[in-house]
Length: 212
Length: 275
Image 1 (cartoon, rainbow over the protein chains, first blue to last red):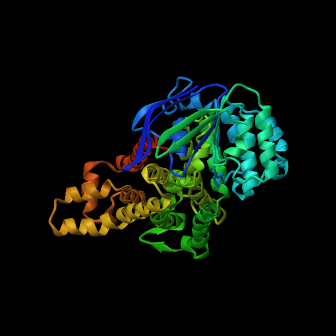
Image 2 (tube, rainbow over the protein chains, first blue to last red):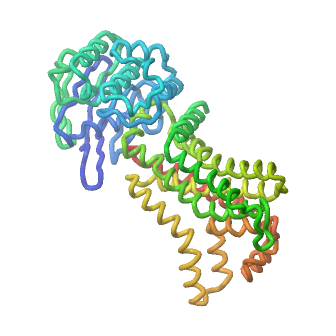
């Protein structure tokens, strides 16, 4: 469970999150929407423990993600909007992921195959030299292999072709574990079949929170 | 602990593949090769000859280029990762900030220290093949001095990297630190202080808290235990401590300085927003 209470985050004079309060429970699949600069990414970064709030707090399964980041992140999968230019090769990246999180390497390979990503043929290629779609597929495969109870996707399908998007949504639907699924998206029609809750943000505030 | 080693190991692997590491290794290896080709070991200046002379020249050049190499290649370590969102992804895994930060430092330290050490080892091996006497005491002193100088600048670089927002600013600050320690303290500040008739002991104290200056004096102290080439300054230094204590201070102080800066950087890294 994620509890956000009166969370405020400012960057200089700009208020990015303005006293946001909300709760995400098991089996919530949320589409987090809003215009650019509405505070969506700031909110998920606060959940991941990247930001020190100006006031208010975030608790993930009762733990503060800043003070207890290892405990919290053990159960969180995250895919960013744009894959970062990581210079490690795929094998090294998988080593990093598997050793830090105790993920089964075979499981990453399994999800990569499902995403039509040839992981074995590119094992020694630098991650940043892969195409945008390949990078995103690998990050998605890692996120699924982690078997987390909280999965956060920040516009995960931006680099994917329609076929890969279908594969991604199919894999998500197949995953029937109890979890919180949080999508940051501008295209709600794409995730309509997956989400059961829509949250709209504007100017750093939650302006609408609807159950579907 | 496994995560600390994992971060160090992966950073080391990543650095070794980078182009800067190739240039860095070629510069130090090339220096030694150049000295041999130029016949430095056969020349004699101020009583220094053979491998001692070569190592002295190597250390004189190293003192100028090693700090800036370490600063510019390391200062972007965290700020660069923050800049291009690598940190955002890599830290979404359950790795503590302590393991990530110190793992990066260990990996980067091995990367910057090994080429300078190997260059000296190559010099010793070539010298041995050519039949020159091996100045072991100088070799071990320089190994220690380079270790502590590398620590000092690595610590400073990580400190800068922990608080700057962009890698351009980090680079700018690095250049300033380098120029300040290399030239400003030595030429501008000290000249100005002498002109203003400020107490000599204070001037020497300021010079000696500069790790580059301390390194420079310690480097010649084995050839010239009385530090006669330094003139009256030697009087103040050797009056304060014996030559062996001075050597220990010149290794210990930059090491502690580097650790202090690295620790300060870690505290900032921990307290600041990560992305």
